[in-house]
Image 1 (tube, helix red, strand yellow):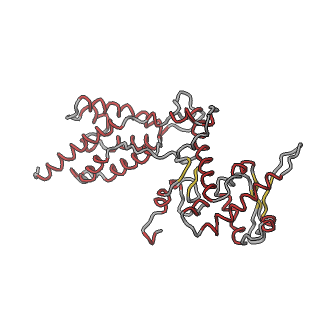
Image 2: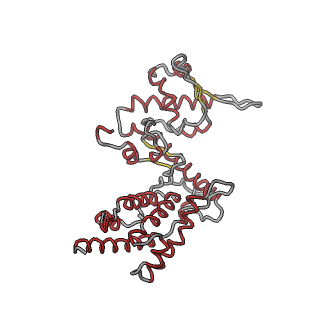
Length: 355
């Protein structure tokens, strides 16, 4: 990646993925690993079975043998005899697998534990071994949920089944999260969620995978002008520009705590450019604000307490109630930045005139 001038996180983020778009929750795509935003520099990233949809060379090497193993696991689970006195566990072991499907390559069987752990159809359940280099044998527990893949007999059907199940799980997880938060209205999409037990005359279409919203918090035109005015009046805007870009990113991905922290940071960052020591002075003493702008600044001043709560309230018994509904409307910050740009333009023009 480095030799080609590419960033691994950027590349992974550009790949299609279904399921949860947050930092937690089930998701599935062409690569393993849940969230590119939490990817460590030394964390390995592997291709999933789904990658064979676009890389034909992976079909005979990965997808086809995996599907044979998957349906062998389904057969083992179906053949298990339940016990009336104990929990029945079904296991797949590498020696048994090599005997049951003799056409599997030894290299594939050795790599299979990592492959199984990266696929939603098989990632549940405990595992044993291998203990290299002494004992290469391993075993993987087979859960009842594997029966949901019984009709997935080819690659396309398998990926479609995974996408449907993972997307449903992500929506259900979000539904229960919102339900636990008393007083927080449910998003409109949940009104027709299939797990609410609503009767349907025809099979429902699988929910569309949630996508980041296209909304921005800080207008791109304002960011562009902040870049142009970098250094005006001896005030450098590089940090402010980056804060605004990160705020837009987190706003699109609906990350309320990051939005609060960045908004509070911007409010505390800009007063010196207005000739003020703190934001309260910007809101009350700086000349040139119209009546509406002053109302916006008052909202931002009131928000500082809320931002302080997000940043400094320590962990304790109460559950946090902060969500995206608590993020102030973008118009207030955009008004502040419009005023800031006015001051920076005046400083630039004064410097050009030699004043």
